[in-house]
Length: 145
Image 1 (cartoon, rainbow, N blue to C red):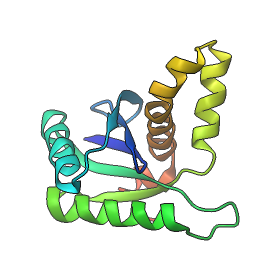
Image 2 (cartoon, rainbow, N blue to C red):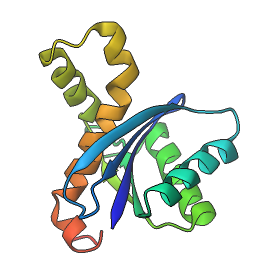
Image 3 (cartoon, rainbow, N blue to C red):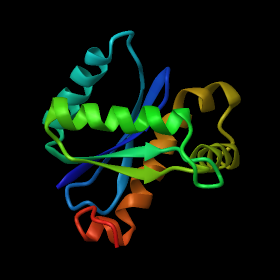
Image 4 (cartoon, rainbow, N blue to C red):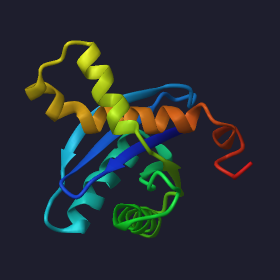
């Protein structure tokens, strides 16, 4: 049971994958999005096959007051496209402050500004996926508790 974790942006997608037992998240890459959505979905389809993914966890950026803005709506639509096109269930996971946390982790690890830019989205995907894996929702097959 591997789960793919995604930090979806307009230009890039941070990608992480769980171990086979669904306990830990490992960063895979920061994927540079293509102009056509079907190209992005085709790439993700290859990852779903390669890692035998049974679920995709998509970061869901909410505003600090809990409302959903344009980025959140875009992620909801992206998750819907994954389900319809790749035939893999998705779960939206609150990603508030994950990019900031990833940034702090990389700064604390003394990663240069140039290198941080290339891995920040991948690190955010790891934090999103690990947050989901550690939650009661993951143990309840993604159902709300």
